[in-house]
Image 1 (cartoon, one colour):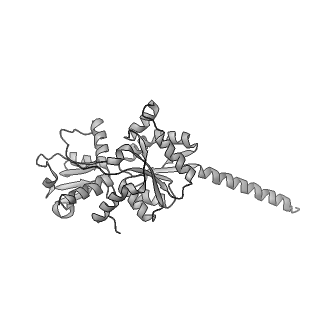
Image 2: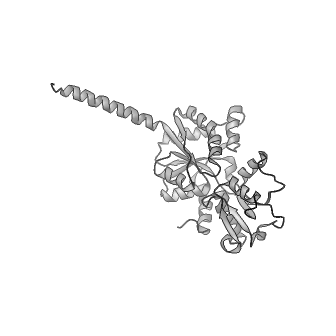
Length: 288
């Protein structure tokens, strides 16, 4: 068979074009995840309409990949396995710390400017934080802002050290699991985010006359959608604009916002989370 340099060049060019097409196709997928602060099925349900909306706005495929724990959401983003993650304030601070500042928060819900946590119990003798001394308490995940860091921070501010002043502390792993532990009598009290608490009450998944809120924290910055700093500026702009364009006066947009427990999305910045970072350092959960 006669060797043809021209044929070889053409074959290589064709292969190169195929490879480039495959590579371009792979880049047209936005890989999204979220901290597992609720059951995986619930996270998928909440994200589905938002993912479909983003696909239309960005003109690219949007894939939601659940992660096993909070740390996996951080590692997935900074190791380029994910492109955008729904972080809590503390998880964002951890990602910022781990990546040496190479992550950028784009948007947050208006509600996240003054987010709050609630402490709940079934014990009639518990009416204030001081009553938790000698009792058992469940936080959510160790890396949760609203289910651990900020409740711990407010306990410390009230001169209550969870590690020494309580009989036992536990970590349920998720906000809804914390409520289940309290309702089931596994612990005397629990701390979780106010948004999940309100949702569980509205959906009648908890009886507020049996499990009741006895303390609500002051407000703090919390959740946001974060991307890596090396994402192209045009893509960051498109994603931000897509979130900001969600209009509660439009029924289809309101349905998406309601699932996100949001009245609307607003821009955010890393500086908003300096108080969270200080609280994490003060509580010994972040070393500086």
